[in-house]
Length: 526
Image (tube, rainbow, N blue to C red; front, side):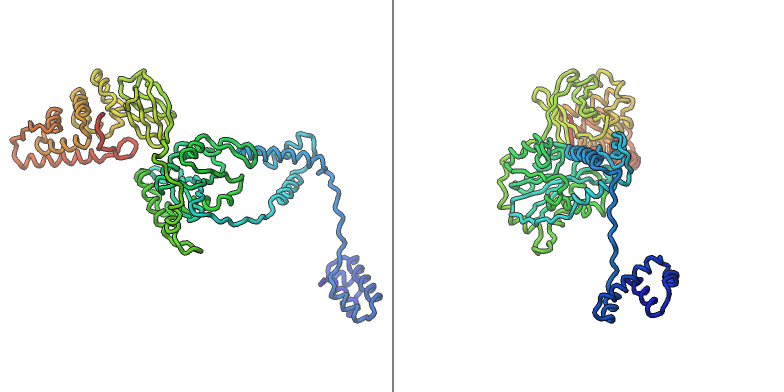
């Protein structure tokens, strides 16, 4: 409008020619001529010249709309071909194959293969216009939840330093839709056993069961997609439902808002618990830290209600479904054959059993944290479950019968290497007496002597007889038989020697095992 006014003013008021106005304003003479002609027509049709001039000067110029160009390349036939390819993408998305969907470049190549000559920009513009039509902003309806009615569950990844090693672990998070009460557990994987066990632990912790559990499309809960909005639950979820008598609901695809709280809860719990501290000695210590953090978070007063999650949960706890008399057993039962190394294999890792079971079939009860091995309904071995690849989990006590026959195999055995305490004890005091050392271990197993008791006896022996450590003396002390005679050396010499060896055994007892964890000392041979 400014240009229009300048043209008219310079022509009528200043008397400048069209050529001069065009040159000064740096616009086409056709534009100058058009505005002057329109102004003359407006003045000619106006009743009052002054009014007509003022009205025309204040009116914005009118531009002719360009007629849309006919689409030469993007014909209806090409659009149909693009629609078919986009439909295939939608099917893959529903099947969980999002990483195998066609990108825009792939769609362009497919169109070229079909003989269509079309450019990449044209394809991108068409797909973008279609997505914009589909992705229009929608309104969400705020939900009101009844106490004790709905609880939401989701997984989240956390990265912690465990015993000096950075590891990726999984966070199982539960959130009450009514009170916003949160609880969480740490697991190695997002597998079925962890899914089941987390629910069992949560229901046991709160002392009841919510009437409805809400999940997204996680693979441990959804067996398959029947239709876009219909999913078939896994056998694990059906087992949970049957035992605890709750109902379940799945969120629709890409509709996290239907869950309400839990996706934010995963991020919230992860940030509050592990943003300032992410290094722990082991997973139980990390879990204890997580529970302490959750207790603090649940005690914070919330905006809106002015009450804490703990206070609101105490009101809805009485409305929960009754907890069953017994919790559901969460384990996987497999059968395995003992190989020539007296081990069984589970998911690339090996676990030892007593050596007399070589060639036998055993039953393995797999839990999220341990493996229990049975032979003829008797438990013969228990191991901490390993989540590494191709690891050997060996208990030296399982090989005592074989070592008695082959004592020379003890020094370089995997069994001795895996028990750091006994390995160091052997190297420091019994390197030249493997048979006697094996007899000591057999005696400890028969008498159910723990490593803690063995350590105590070794300390006593070093204090009274620092020059000689023998199996007979240790057996006497372990069995509480007072047969050890103190040496007649001077008191000072005995004291100095004892202190030196006590320092050695103290370092020995506090060394870590082969994988960086402190070796427990409260178990005995069974």
